[in-house]
Picture: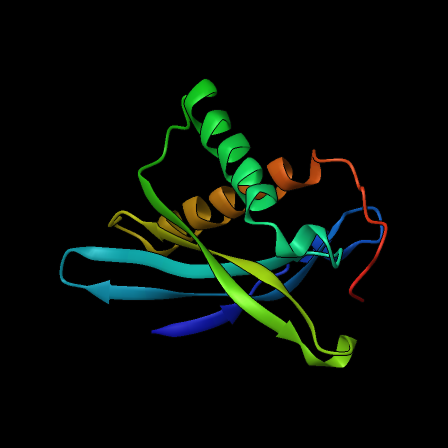
Length: 141
């Protein structure tokens, strides 16, 4: 599997958003039946209080889930959201949560087709997250 760092999620780190990314990477799997892309985005709400409340992350998941349903998202992908506990040592030991989103595509005939669908799905995640207005009062970073 070849891993790649992606620019697609970089806009989540912009000052205009209430987030920062912890990591984003993807890679291609090649087998006899074709190509599949897999990878993850891990992000945090950049607020000491908001990052510690799991309901804030659930609201984001719900928006994303509704978006896929309402737009009849046309691609076959598996998207898994998971909350993880985190301690931000560089920020004075602030405790909170991060959200880890794993995206796996279906098998495709070409690597490009599988990558394009993976990147499109990541872009949708970014679009949905960036629709949420910044409400950061106590930034972690």
